[in-house]
Amino acid sequence: MATEAPAHGGYLDILRAPHAARLLAGTLVGRLPNGTGPIAMTLFVRDQGGSYTLAGGLIAAYGVANAVGQPLLGRAVDLKGQPRVQLPAAVLSALGMALFALTGIGHLALAYAAVVAAGLFTPPLEGGLRALWPSVLGREDRVHRAYALDAVAQEVMFTVGPLLVTLLVALRSPAAALLVINVLGILGALAVVLSEPSRAWRSAAREAHWLGALRSPGLLALLGSFFFVGLALGSITVAAVAYADDRGTPSVYGWLMAALGLGALGGGVLYGARQWSGAPEGRLRVLVGLLAVCYLPLTLTPGPVAMTGLSVLSGVFLAPALACAFIVVDRHAPSGTVTEAFSWLVTTFGVGAALGSAVAGPAIELAGTVAGFAVAGAGGLVALLVLLATGRVLAAPRTAEGVARHAVAEPVPTAVQTEKNTH
Image 1 (cartoon, rainbow, N blue to C red):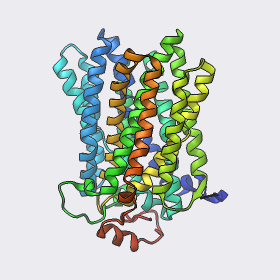
Image 2: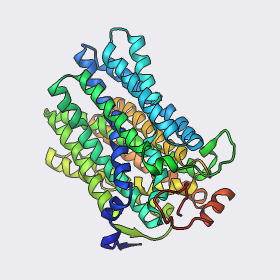
Image 3: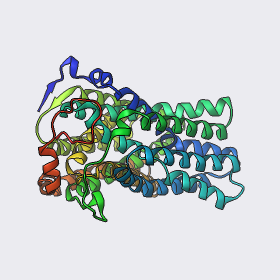
């Protein structure tokens, strides 16, 4: 059930809160190296005379290292605080990419080592921001709207970031683009960690456990579902390339990806403009179900104009599903593991996308472009089935420490306090 958000409770209300605009902008700029890494690395390798196969191998190494590093650094943030982890990680990641940009692909072992270091030390700014929202915004409804704003802002970053890389390459070179993007990444991380909320934030008390956030059955169920959402998106990326090749118009690929992003942007804006009642777990099942249904028409592969429209439709429920997933993560993360839990969501989603790209390629070679989009539809349906099969787990009460944490949470009267969940 939804009601129209009052004017004072919309996105402007979030951005007017002390520190909120700075934290959101700093996080987005700090994530530019990661968000634009694959395209910048591909352009650099090709400029160096390397093959697409080499570029793919380096990007895969970077992605795997990133998947390993995010939850580990997220756990370190929960234990040590944000400034002591985020900024050093950003600097080390940038140094790794700078080494790659300055030494090139002449020594492959060094190139792989450099991109692995860059991926491994990518700071978990995304999870860190979501951990900060409760202390910055206080009220539960404002935190939920901030999650929606966060999902919308990601779509903007993934649209503007590649354009920025392309501009830097045109003005200078791919190596310069790599260097500039990573300098911006450090500046973004610096803007976040020097803010009062980031410096003051402390994770809630946590139980010592080697599984950390992964000891939550509800979180595991959510991660299992969003692995397949990521798989669907990864397959769409490859299938869209095949569709453009079939039509003999490479530019169609860009239109399809932009259309998907536009759909997600519009869906996220509309979702965050309303106040939602009821348990978010049930709402998430509906959103993922709608997301899966909207992937299926892509298998029709009509002409470019109609296909662009279907791409818009396929993105409409992506940002709302992500925003709702952020709420569910916060509800099910064991006490003291919130940054790690959000980082696991980022990692799982990314690994799913990588696998989706890997699966879609052979599917297209065996059965054509339609099969690539069918992988996306199947991924969306499996994501829904996981949520349906684990409904009892997702609806189960939190761990004892989680219940206690939420039971004592009050609206935060100032912008800076220690972490409190607001659900």
